[in-house]
Length: 168
Image (tube, rainbow, N blue to C red; front, side, top):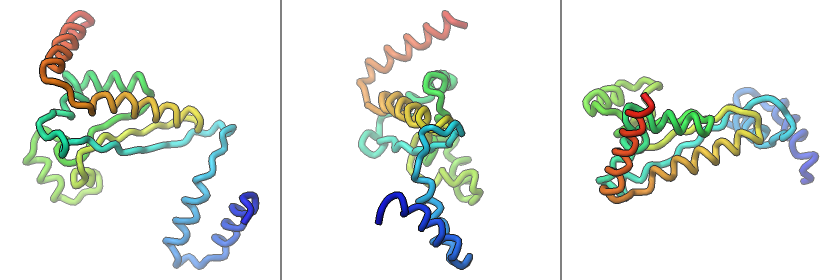
């Protein structure tokens, strides 16, 4: 089938479908959304989850590395990349008892607590810029997911502390 005819035919089929075929409707809608108009000025929301390698490196405190002192590192990453960055999943909260309680509570707001530990990156921008911001955010986050020697990490924390002390 030619690409030029594909989308219009798909949309015509969607209109003729019975509304009881909810999964088919969702799939067709998702297929429609895979086409990008690079010249459109409207913004688009792009979301990705980046797995934190806690199983490979159980002794590394990735959450602490990503957040930094009082959240300064993740705030800086958000400012630099123009993305909303969050650490979510099992092990993302300080209070393990509260985390377990919220996970068992079943609220959709805390559904991420049942997932593996991950970084959630969300970007809202015009389409071409959106993908650039996402790539930049993923590249910056990746730097914090590479385990380094404890010596280098303590040096990094000391430098960060001194930087925060001087700038505040």
